Image 1 (tube, helix red, strand yellow):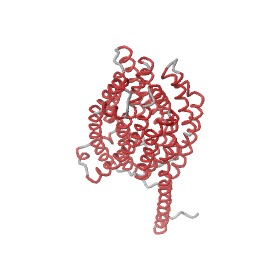
Image 2: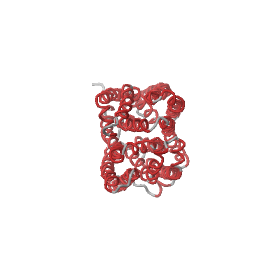
Image 3: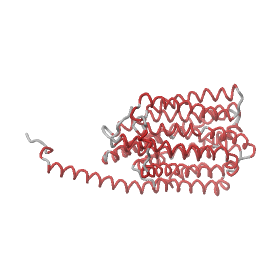
Length: 466
């Protein structure tokens, strides 16, 4: 099931790797969409707003877990690209230990501090009870969520994007069925939507472990693999925590923006929630290309295939830019209809606000496409400084708008917050990519010179002359 991304056409490999990942991410967003549609339709706009008011906290904690999983998978991918399977298994074991610690921390913070964190965000009093219930139930299942993210990241690191797709499909179908049963039939309220997600992910984790045990012998860990080496632990921790921190920085900026939105009232919260659900699905193709580039670059860096890295990143940028234009057109045509799926009829003000948000953001998806590809390419090379700085710039942009501008400019500031944050984050990434691009060119020339010198010294490597 593993796939070597260091040989063959870069564009073809990236597309083939991306397609299952894209479908899988679409199904993963099905979690959020199913929750929002059922909650909005069955429980009303207030319940939808309550779930939305907790969204930034979910992103803050689970975003850290997702970023951490991506970082922990980079040493796995590099070792696999270099053909060092023992080192790969040790990297997997190291990641398991770190992931367990992360899951425990998220569980404690999320369950014990939910109400306090929501109050810091200025959550409207009428939404507090339902938002707290949703978060406590969801964070109680943190181990399942973290395990699912990490196992999926490891399997993708080996070039297999199909297997995680299977489990995402299973989890999504289960989630849709369970959320309808829990809310519609059992009347469990917003807590039922969170419980459905936890149960569905837990089942998917179990199935994933069974598959690894039966069909992926190269991932079977022995006692020797658990003898962790301090330098490798430091490397994995640095990559995992740094990438997790990057996601948390972005999430913290979103939380600060949410603070401003909460002050605009329930309609604004509901509009932002509905718009974000649509927007998150729309940008999945762009984010997916970025994730694919991380694995592609990491494997080729392990194999020291410098030219292939440059070629793959350039071609991925072209693909992502084309996707951005197509996605923008879809939003222009069907954005209002998509919003109405969440809020139903009789909510024209909410629909109008959400539609304005989507139109402006969709028109600027090209910026986001460049952001995703460059950030993930740099991460695949094992560099963390520029992506972290990009997260800081994004935090500042969203935070300033959320805390200081939304109160004065209203929902217009909310609409402009994301594009401003994208531009701010892109500045350090473009500077860093120019630096890394030069290093790749130099490494490529050095490798060519070494190969030429070796051929001159060894007559058997000389080309035959007829």
